[in-house]
Image 1: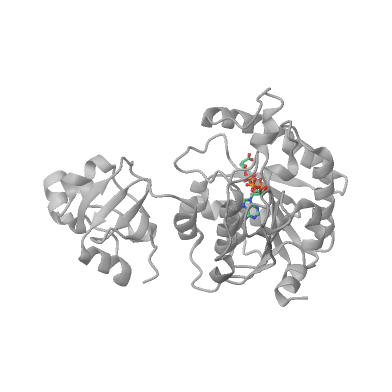
Image 2: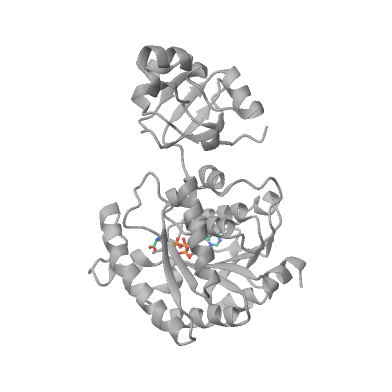
Length: 371
Ligand SMILES: Nc1ncnc2c1ncn2[C@@H]1O[C@H](COP(=O)(O)OP(=O)(O)O)[C@@H](O)[C@H]1O
Ligand SMILES: N[C@@H](CCC(=O)OP(=O)(O)O)C(=O)O
């Protein structure tokens, strides 16, 4: 058995994520039998003494049938309504399914913001820690009813990776409706199974297509999740969950990627957001951000593109147009032209002390070049 598989077998703290397609029927209802089978596997791992956090998708999918919706609606408000109905049904099912094993579950609904803002992030960390300490099995999902399009995970793969990071889990298991990662969508002929991913070279021939019917992320977000997690990750289907947790050679094994461990907030910024616009900066600002770890000040800004609001993630681009960093901007796009090229001292004097702040504070800035 590979030593990485052994690490999964021996993991004391483990995050298991199941996708919508593993938990719900094509008719948009809960798949009670598959849920019960998966709960049995998770409860058995817990009975072995491990701490398990379960990240469950399926709220939107489980709400479709009860609301008479034929498929996943494109409108965010309707998805949120479905999630509101489906999450309750899912959690009720989990509560009774885990009760068969004498396990108490706790519902934890997180937004992307909870992963990013320091106070929220500590709070989520404390809550999950306390639940585990009390012997409760936390069941996590995105708080779909309040998440907005701009600042939303949408899939739970990256959320699961960030939760794993947050609680310092030893391993992450991603359960989907495919048994492994393939070189192409396995619904199409010619796709070959990928047994192990040790680094980017093993993904060179892999086409990461769109998702199935009810899920959202497809393979792109699963590969991204494996990259973010920084711990051993197995991707397989729910039927092989027990084998994956036992370290058996099923699914695709992702070796932990080496490299600098970023904070959970910065991982979120780098991997789970898209820039809502671009702030263009001069060479001096690129140098200061990349090599001196400074905040982005108005003096180095030369232009702005897009229609973002204060608090949104934006890309910071140098004179060559390449994205150097991403950060949470302190101003609306419309405010920036007036500030460009000015010193913070001048701005404070001319416009008031509120304008002394950086365009992006260094704590909310993550470098994206490999330079
Ligand atoms: N290279 C690939 N390897 C495996 N599956 C792929 C690949 N490209 C696309 N897919 C599709 O991705 C789907 C799983 O993604 P998704 O529906 O988001 O899952 P989940 O709901 O479990 O998160 C599979 O059903 C498969 O058809
Ligand atoms: N939070 C959403 C997850 C949406 C989703 O489709 O996720 P996934 O099936 O993991 O790709 C839900 O519960 O419906």
